[in-house]
Image (tube, rainbow, N blue to C red; front, side, top):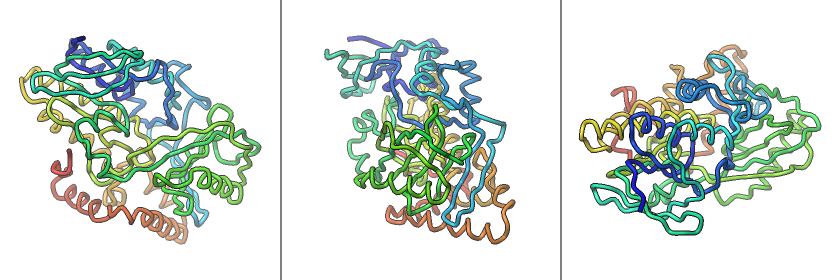
Length: 402
């Protein structure tokens, strides 16, 4: 049995951020990753300005091999069924287009943690004084003993399932898939991440350039037909935007938990086990989860350090400290914040006001029709209740968290 102060499950950006805090504080930290590193990661790679600042401040300049081409993104473009489009530059300038296979590995190495790749998490037991982690490493059973465990293993987290076996049944799941096309003609500006508020295209539809190809992505309820949804989007892009693409050369997809950030239903763990990043439910409004993963990961590491220094329960420290990231992330979905504040890193209200009065009306109508697409999940009352709680108390109710 191998011993460490902290075991982190998943070699993600949130894991790298947590490990950096822990290693800097002198804690022996081991990261378990089921794949061989550097490993593939399904992601657009479009990082927000806040995430970019975090990487620079904590890990240094991003190496060229950790970037796709184009290497940067200027902002986001929203497109609506009324054929109105809005382009918004990020506050603070362009941001990097991360190649997650190499950017995650670079950050993990920069953290200074010990890494055990090709090691799959198989379960754990929290005894109160320590946690026994069962794993499979290159075909052999192995055990680890740690004072704390951090689950940073993404939306389909095995650590979450180990702590809360019924959690996955309590939230709706979506399938997010993207196909890569050779470009015949694409008028979409490659400096922007393009997003469609169109209920006829899916719950989450996007496109952007990467390494000489065009990504066409679509998100929808798990169980729907990916190929049919994708064909519909490609046809729409051709009919409406003049996009001409060759048959896709490759594709990929994964399950996503979109709901927690909208309705303040985060899962942060139990006892000596912390959950962070997208495993905890953090996801920004345009589907960018890297910046909140980095910051929440760092907070999980800081909570362990504080719990050790103060001899306090780690959950007590973590839930106090993570409240700031909950506010920042859930604010992006809060209708009151969107209407009267600037919760995002691109100025939607300013872009809206540049439109004619008629176009503004069309955009607001289209957005409402898009929101109605989510009606079946009965999130409306929860979002409204969370928004009012935020207005009156300056925070979101912790009783909704697991």
